[in-house]
Image (cartoon, rainbow, N blue to C red):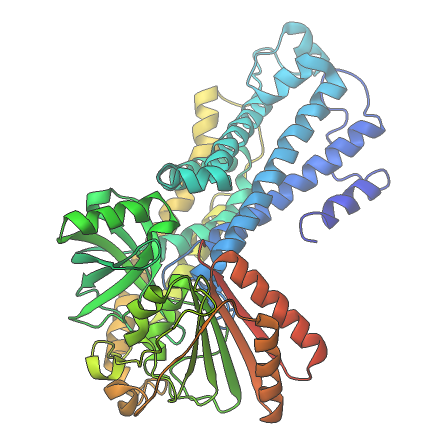
Length: 578
């Protein structure tokens, strides 16, 4: 709707209400209907590309300053925002391509190859062209220069597009990761040199990304292969990672230094505490990096990692830590997708929570059984072993999480996110003021030489805006530091902290988990949970994390349940490949 409807409206109304005065545009003649249509569509695409770029930048912030994500009431954090960032990014590239190709066709149609060349590159005018265009002798082609920057932006968008193609990104993720940010910066710079008003859309996202950039720490770690698991699975324990427990789990971005600087977002199996260890579980089936991690674990006992985070998940206004009498939870996990919920589940005391976990082999279940909440306590646990023979004996293991003492939940420190958001907004406003009122938005002109024009009319406004944003960050950083200190002092007053009983040991006595062979009937599970929620006059939250097929199937089951039940059903889905 956002990217198609405005173009359709512009195309249908352009003959009555032209959007620009580009006709006539080059060396001869008036514009016909096709030229008017090309002009309207291309101009609309360029303006929509500005909007897409601004939203795309705001969605890519992973720090604590993302006011756009926080304004969604915990529905969106970075794991949920990255798919939206990817979609909006595709639209931005598509609109940029339509803008560039459309105007190339427009210039060729209205004036031929010479007109196209003059309008996309700073080609010099001939004396005859100067007379035709009624320009002074010695005037140079500033419009071609400005559009030349647009051509460079189009070429950089292609360089941004190719490594981001799914089949290339999955096979050459390290190439994508190294190129994505610098090529994106080049694309934004070329767009700004071509079209200064695009800064009005890009500045908020740039300011927010700068404030919220990840802070990497180098920490010692050990890796252990979990025997018998499918893949196999490898557990990576990071010592002294710090952090706070989040209502729906945590994730961190990790670089294993012996494997290079390639970073991956991974869910934390054990909550980080100040001096203890956080852990992640990775399956070798995820890709070449995870296979290399398994090989490293088999040959090297300890090594160093770089870690950014931990950060919290989004997914809605539900919690694994708080008691919510009016909410019933149905958690659907596949393989290592359960890991992000384990710290919260170890202390979940709600009576209306059902975890359904699908694993390939019984060894997968046994590897994490002791970290699951004890069956018969606050959480019901059902495990489906999908590759087990129908008559194979399956042993139900009792969770020993409360006996191990490993999953202690630290008191979460206040991140002072509101202060970080204010600093980001202040920096963005400083940049916007500098862009719009301080220096002004210049239109192409022909005065001075080429170098003088590029510096004064194009580069200097960008530099001015950047310096204003840096000044805004410098002024706000002290406020942010004070807010963080105040947040640490107020930690004990936070009403959302787990109770002392929650921290000391989970859910009482507990019992065995229910273990079955085969695959679960997701439709029946969701319908049963919806019926139970209706009887208790509760809302139902269905959360799914795991392979794409599982998340999609759960989403379809929720949609079907909404049509037949009178209970409010909320779906929260996170794909493992985000």
